[in-house]
Image (cartoon, rainbow, N blue to C red; front, side, top):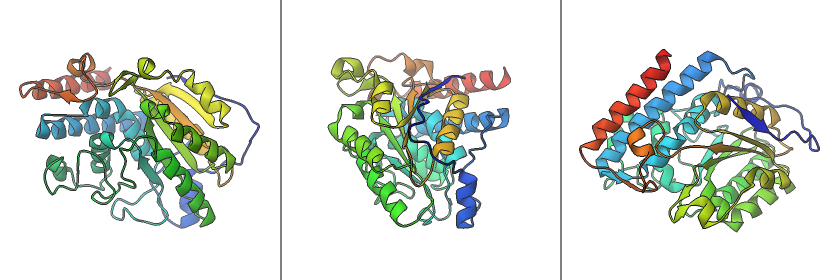
Length: 320
């Protein structure tokens, strides 16, 4: 487990943990931020990530195609946030004191729905309606349809701007809630993302954490050939963010990184970003090596093979 992070203390702030916030609002909350990555936490998050991947495959089979590769690659991120960090009430998605999770990349909705089901916000049996007429689970995430979906994403580059406004608004309201924004490396091509990053530092939004899925792929090809954004760690640091870069498919590293971000969280302070290097199709070798991986067409006979490979890999790691 490796976590690399920026250590500049120019904008030091008091720690403010999830437990502090839960106590402040008089509710137990779901967040952990315990400061120690235990095997129990790793096992719990790994099991959740496996189920999220399994749900994503089942949903993908309904349509026969889709953004399955991104869901598989980001499953560990979703599992860590929803299972270990977010403060929410499954039975009340609009609970005022909840942490906000904003999915900027609307096409990742298939992975987000799986996480919402894992969290108990959406019934598991409803996942089989994914992408169907009159479903609450459209192929691109929409806040007007889906419980727990805070924004309608998909117009890339807008998620972080909304997150900045939301984090600032929560501060003005005196709320202890945090804002988590999920975005992709492709969105780093957008100028609006960097305007928002600059604004977050200007307003010292210590209640904002961004997580970037760096899978090195976007619709037009490999990210570094479409528009080179590296050195991305140094860019975020130069914008004044508390920056960490981790293996986004290493649950232990993710837990440690989110714990570090939680320890930095405060009403006024530096925003945090976690850069997560992931692999499209993670956990399913058949899909990890597929050439056209942004929007996958998977043959009817391949779905069961995908599930078998996923289960074999998970059970092999669990017994190691």
